[in-house]
Amino acid sequence: MRFTWKGTDKIQSKKSMIAGLRAMMLIIVLLLSISFLVSVFYIVNKEKRETIKRESDTALNTIADSIVSDIERYKEMSRIVMTDDGLVKYLYAYRGKIDAGFKFATQKSIMRVLTPTTMVDSVFVFRDDGEYVSSSRDQYYFDYDKLNDPEWKQPIVDQKGAAVISINADGAIVRKKGRPLVSISRLVYDINTQRCIGMMVMNISSAFIDRKFDTMSDKNMAVLGTDGTFLSGDASIVPYLSGIEISETITHKEIKEGTKSLMLSAKKISGMPILIACVIPIDNSFEMYRTTYVIFILALIFLLAIVIAGTYITKNITNPVSGLTRAMEKNKEKGALEKIDMDIPQNEIGVLKDSYNGMVERVNDLFGKLLDNEQVIRRAEMRVLHEQIKPHFLYNSIETIGSMAMDANAPDVYSALETLGSFYRNFLSKGDREIPLSREISIVQDYLRLQKLRYGDIIEDEYDIEKETENYIIPKLILQPIVENSIYHGIRLTGERGLISIKSRLIDDVLHIYVRDTGVGMSEEQIEKLLSAHDDMKPDGEPEPSESFGLWGTIERIRYFCGTNDVVKIRSTVGEFTEVEFIIPKRGQTDER
Image 1 (cartoon, rainbow, N blue to C red):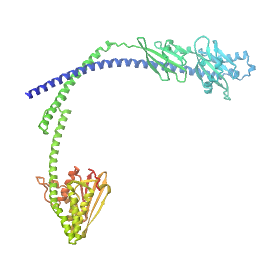
Image 2: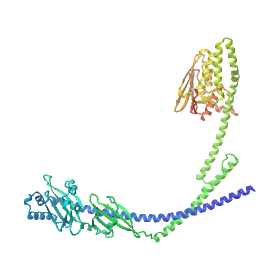
Image 3: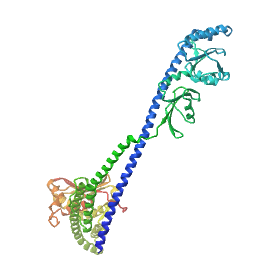
Image 4: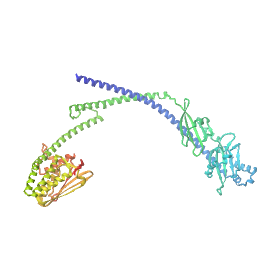
């Protein structure tokens, strides 16, 4: 009964999952539809505004370029007027000679130069003594305080003869009736001596700007001075500019006027106190009849795409993933790693199944190898332990024999027993499987001292142990078997005096230990057989008996300790030497001294 209820719960859970998936699909469709409509409105409105900005940029730049071109032409004309003979004579004349006739002649000379244009409203020429002559068509108001103010004249002086553009001469010269003026002011220099002899102000009627709008009647534009003086165009634009910071780069700002939206664009003409502004209405209406069919078709495409995607996902992803999950759960319940055998499309899920099966096969293979290696290591350790049992019995008797030697007045025998006791004390190492290198070296030293008692002085030993390697942790009893092998299968067979040297180095945080003897050496075949002894094991995991079992077992223990086979190198020349190098990555170190 419990099983039935459990199955029912799973069925209800799947139904709830399907219902949730359907609800999610509906929500996705709704969100996509809303997002699409919002995107359409946003894109249309944004494009409208970008189009208006581009049109405004074109119009403002066109007007600005045209104004700059005309003013450059008037600046060139002012330079010509400045060199007129009649004007130069007036500026050089003594004050006592200047009368009405002299001024009239000067005016005629200036007007002769200005005859080709009708937009130059007046020219004023000022002498250094305050006298001036004018050629004008209208009456003007002079602000003499400004004209005599050094601050007003300073910008003109700073230009050293170059033209300074201003509106109504910065308020110093204003026409009593009519349009504002664009003033071109400059110092007059003698072309021969380059001495300043006066100042000239040429006033141009702002009416010259009106012609710029003839081809732009559909644009609401205005030109005004930076001081707010209206020059030309649509004066109703001026209030919109209040509080807006305008630079030489075109500024765009959307403003509201009741229910209407307007795009205000403005810029300052470079090097001139003149602003250009443009206002274009923004049509916020959305013409649905032009986009309804497109939206409907796109919505259908979205829905169809979702259905196709849902079917594809169910067939190629959801169902295969569910099958894989069920198969993995079965493996989990059985507590076994077995391959999954089911039909899955050859896509990413199929690759996942193949990867899982490959992983299962690899893990099972690794488990098998791990068990084999563990058995080999355990057998090797058992053999080592077996070999230790005998010394252990002897170790218990050493102190008794030592005491008897001292009682018998045999100090050499006592010293030998003391060395033997030290050897087995380090050898047993309190049951530790891993010890610092310094203790391993002590074991070797005690062992060699005992061997020297037997073989005399035919054995020499030397040590070169780096200080920083002494506390590195290594497997216990890896050097003594090598040294024993060097004595019995190397030096002793030569019948001559031999040297055993032990050296340690730390290279890239990896410990290298070298044991070298001057024995009979080994051939390449012997070295190869020794390093590949693992392949010569019996079916039960026991290695074939050989004289080098100690060396072989040591190599296997180091391989197990390091987790890799590349832990030993053997170099030898027959009749000269044999060197065994152990390569042990850092496992740890101790503070033992």
